[in-house]
Image (cartoon, helix red, strand yellow):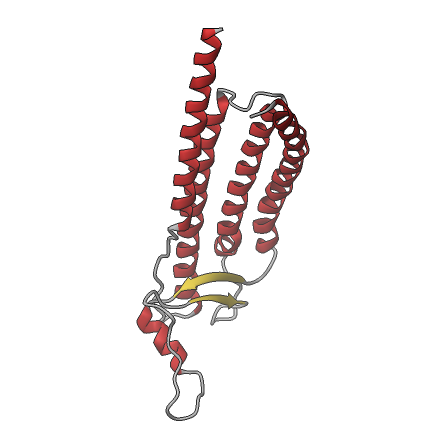
Length: 213
């Protein structure tokens, strides 16, 4: 990397780092506000992953001309949002369930806020002229962990919320809720761990070079 390129990178890193810090703060505020707002509402909403059989049953209720049908696009069933304003007996949705309604989203937002903060710290070191700071490998590893924890935590909370909400809002129905865990966050975490290894190797080269001077 030439001195000119390094200088341009350092100048760009500083405003990007500041922007990420602001974004991290905004995401944290939203993550805290969402569940608080939801508990003030009488109802709740849950993302429901329907089992394939339940998906086909649900789609069969859609009126279509003879000879036409709607089927799920894959073997995993449908993903739908279940909105419940009142329970069958007319009462409000339980407070804990209303809190869980937006908790999955909040977990993801907190994960993104953590990632933005860690990237801002990395960019701060780059702006200071130290692209291979010893902390960078550790912070990229922390970013990978944040991706995995946020994804698994949000998906688990969403599944628990969906099971609970369907059991109290639609008791006795044939709605079959299944868990869903995306593979995309795992792939992103793997790429991030590769970056961590690259920065660790880069730091080792820098230290070896300094030792020769």
